[in-house]
Length: 154
Image 1 (cartoon, one colour):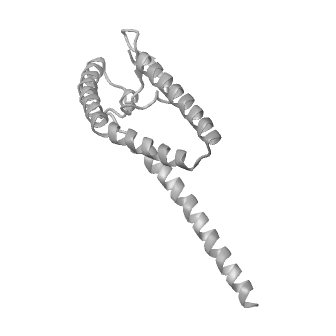
Image 2: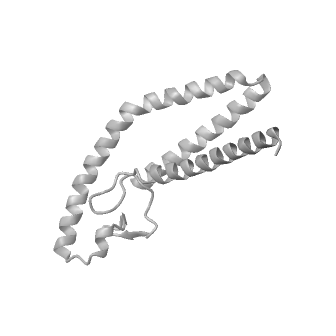
Image 3: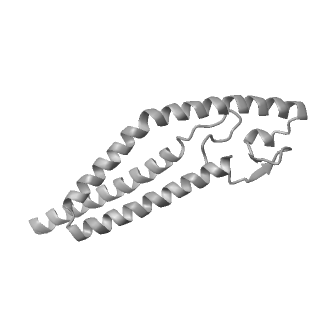
């Protein structure tokens, strides 16, 4: 085999290996980031979207996420105590989440703005205008979604 052909095959092999490794790392990262949710002691997830298993209405008519502990077959007294425990711990998790947001949101927003500013610096005026419009629309949509989630929690 010719030397350049060997070099090309070797380069192709390395490129393919990097591609496969990148794909595997991406999958691993997705699985890892999806599993970093804070769990309730009773088996739910704090701050998570509604469970795939569905919601139940408790006696007050409010939505209540179905927890793993609900499938154990608790007696009514046990259910009351579990609900009390979960309520107490949920409040602590909400407080911790507020602290986390207060500490990290400003830094996170600054990093996003820095990234956007650097990208804007590369664009032509027409591209910059389109980019700004798209970002503004995305930001408005995310804010609407955030408000909808807040109103559903109330």
